[in-house]
View (spheres, rainbow, N blue to C red):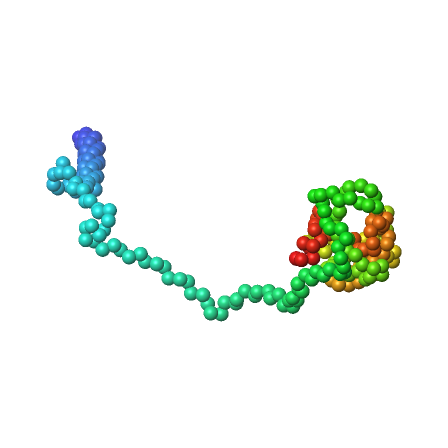
Length: 239
């Protein structure tokens, strides 16, 4: 009898234990589900009250503040950055080269005398010596042989030559592309190529070495060019 009772209690106890376990699982699931729903309700946004269909009124902003009585907002300028008083000033190079005043250009006649033949590049003139008509690129100034001839202006002696037609000739270069030529000189001028001369300096003496003008009385043939173009000597002397 006791064995039957023990067998019955064993089966009954097992069923009771299973029932209790299921009950515990069900209660736990219920509370877990309840907590999730409550949390979800708390996270929902609050409903918006009022009529959502009401249109929003636009606010017009006047283009010119003065028309609406509004005062314009003054522009605020950022302050200038302060420059430290101790900032070193940049050094400026000073040119202390002494200034030397340049003397004005001085032009003097190579000698004084009567004009035997004038400057003529547009009209042909008759050459008694050569027996033909030709241009004359200078002036012939009458003077006795041995009369000193002066440089008309400061410059550098370019050449000293013995020309076949014009005899002993000295050419001096000057500023602004000018050159002066002194022909029919004596055979031994007082200057040589490369010499620097001043206005009025003696460069030679009147001679009779110009074969092309031998029919005329002793004279100096004086001519001027600028950049290689003949210029009236009188215009040059009167500059």
